[in-house]
Image (cartoon, rainbow, N blue to C red; front, side, top):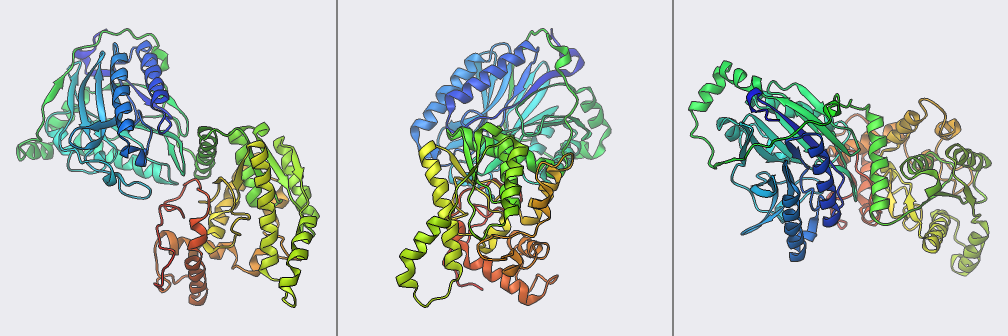
Length: 575
């Protein structure tokens, strides 16, 4: 059917989960979604930023063969775009390489757009790799004028949006790979709504989904009308082919009523760049009921839970592992990791190992066993007492007359790390570290012991967030035994040990860490706690940078992680 007369277009946002470097697999994912869209009578399908290569490809961009393979795959994607128009993220090359979007139409590559505003925050170093785009990409499809942008390009009220609106663009498409961060979704949607209403121009944003190393891309692709009203939202933390019927009849009406925009229009000469006129597509709508209502936003802790599960699942599977192993102490951190692993991987793919010593409370072993029973996981038990005795016997001549201290505590943690890695090496299991952000920040963890692992699942969760997420998990039924949540936390490395023997209570410690690490406040600027305590906490953070550099990667859920978001020198005398 032809739908040019009623100013509407049937489009699809293909919220896909590509894998960095798997160009062939990503291409197949793109082609399969194009075919599904054609079956649904879609005229325009939009894929996320760098969908063809995965995001972020980082130093793979220095390999000429990687660029060539990506360009060859784009030609295959263009040839497969029969009966449909597609926007596909890829890497373009001319005098430089560019983060680019290709306009594919009915079997051909009709146009290319280069990203204007490069991402240079957190883990992203796009200026290290890409040139800066200068020109617009505007095309007409069924007499509708559509503009293309990439990620940050749409976040600014001026160019390139102002230029697109000035040239009469009736809808702007934005392809993105924006990583998840707690509470960012609502903020981002508010900004996109503002951009749509400022320029009286509907906005459709296709965002990436999936885990890539420390990052989780949450999806939640969106569409807004020319007044900034939300029209649709794709699923959170899941692939989704989201079909939409965009009615653009009101765009011209709203613009004619807006005197501010009329004055702005006549004060500008208009952005440079031509318009690509595409032929009409004759399609038949075969699945009219496929258009769904917007997905709902999730509560904070549910977002965090799903982000961690997706990040864990993709890290394990995309790196070729099938099974994970966790040292299960009976404490809350390892319990939470076990719950997340069972949900992400399935209980049969999770192994839990309890490794008691003479200092381990019986309630800890019982709690660990009860948790495994609740999750359907078999718990293995390996005692470390005999191994510890062998260590102490061998070291006795060197430790003569020296009292026990943290040395003996750390030996226990490192024995446990050795046992987990013995199982990892023998059976090919991935070790999951169980440390949280609070203890990673201040060094309350043992190198090559409880810090050992291939992935630190809750590395970006403060201890108070660990408790909040655990209670959220237990909101309907007791998955984590209540005693694990209510018992005072302890490393159980000496008789009667509690975390508060060495640390302030976590409800006091965590706000100080947030102010010092995430807000970058100085000791003197943190005034809600005694200065002596703040100075002590800051000193602990500063002197443990060397430990954090040796920690496994962890899944990002907050604004600032302890990994590449925070790049402090190890050797640092600034106080």
